[in-house]
Image 1 (tube, one colour):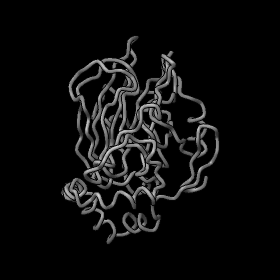
Image 2 (cartoon, helix red, strand yellow; image 1 turned 180 degrees about the horizontal axis):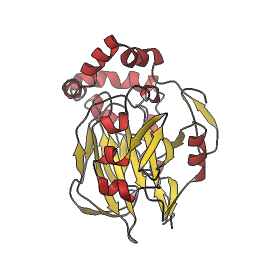
Image 3 (spheres, helix red, strand yellow; image 1 turned 180 degrees about the vertical axis):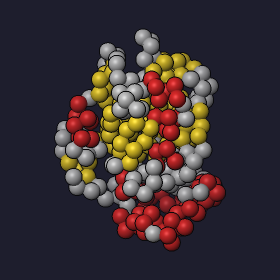
Image 4 (cartoon, one colour; image 1 turned 120 degrees about the vertical axis):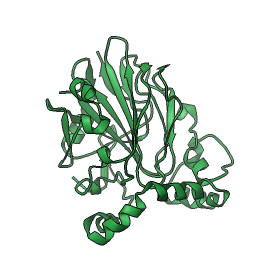
Length: 291
């Protein structure tokens, strides 16, 4: 597999380098870099960055960011942005992200690069040679037991992606639970150095679908501000495709946990993951089916 390459839903390989590998190797690969990283990934630094990115001065960074990341701004709702974070959390035009019409579809909750991993009978799964577990991700033994032999869907957002996200399924959602943690980058190059998805700050809820299937949706912050803002934190009936929240500046990820029975993932995502490729997905498109 090529580093910094992924596939689209038609099987085409896309090559796009977004962050210097040398920078990450320095930060994670030696004692000096790790000392600097401890500061950079702290909540205190994130709060300072957030204050600046929410200020009027930060708006000067918008046009260079659009140019550098080749963002098609015509896809988004027209607005005069008051700050960089106001721009980063911009809303897309509704027709640009249609929700799958298949009533049995699990949809992607966001734009990003998706991978599908099998959860084994010990409720563990492996990402790039790092072993994780459902219990360390969620802090719940009950969820770990429920998702044995199921599926772990990881969707990694980059800075050029749309950073609002929706509910992946219909049903009654639980109260949101928040787990405080670090703010590592979600670039795959750091997987050998840190267990990003069980160390980073994250927030999750479980959606109870009709028929008894549970879908757990986890939002994970990352380096930069990485702030997670959810609109509904209490129990509520939710609709697939309804906006759930947004991430402020920084890389971030969303994880979906699915059971073995009653769910079938789209095969292209499974096969691409098996040969080491992420798959480009969009908010609202089908990535699996309930049955």
